[in-house]
Length: 358
Image 1 (cartoon, rainbow, N blue to C red):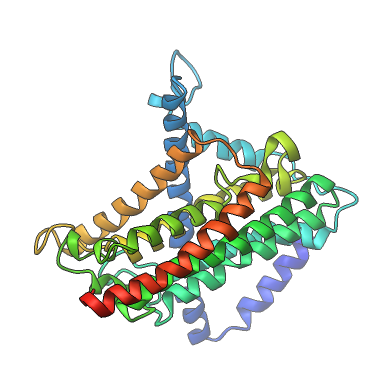
Image 2: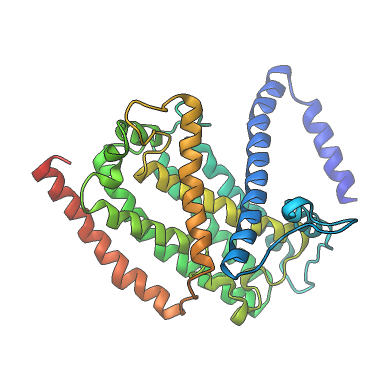
């Protein structure tokens, strides 16, 4: 019955569109489909990388194909695809005591927050979906949708472990958004703009013109931002909202199948977003590290993706080498260490810029 209603609604909607309205809808949908495909392929690549890196760190082989018959392909390259198909083929269960509408909405809502963040990310000199004047502010704003989504997922499951995970996540993300934002203020102070492309253009001229090397206070801001980004994306050692040793699976305890896959996909999408913002703000974005060399549009995409994937690799490395923090340690680091250092750092950047001109 529900499927029939959906088809009837779509049929009425499309037949009511005029020619120009239909073309506008197609023009909106095509970039969305391309972007969704990019996020999906990227997630499969990073999952495979994480499997291999974690195996290397633990002195294991990791995904591999061997013998005759059905297996994960050469070097285990098909393992992420097999895992994705397994998830999508799982039964989709909604607990009888759950709040069904909110339970269904939460995973899609968190993915939408990550998805629309890509709109303002510059992949090259002219490769950007929307060149917003408030690009950094926009990304920080839509990233906050994750807080609402995770609380919804925890509360609507009507499960104490899910609720604990949702509340932990809300406290963690809201807390670490502050030092992350304060760190980016130093970038905005130096570049004099919130526009992502203009921030990258400010850093042209080689590696020593990158904001990271602009003055002695910026590396501190970069470290604070990167560690705060780990906390915002719920990555180890800040994965307390879903710590399996305490909360079963945290806010995703009751989820299965495609909805669970959306949470998984959103985590990797957010990893890309925070890494791309760090690459843009501190590492020159699509600018070449070599002055007046390798600066063509193709090289620009290479440098942007290379810097972003390097930071993602560091995130993976940290996950498999650093133990999880306690909740009290997590909050102490944010409010008693990062916040005061970040505030002092802003004054340091300002004073250095006034005295030495950047």
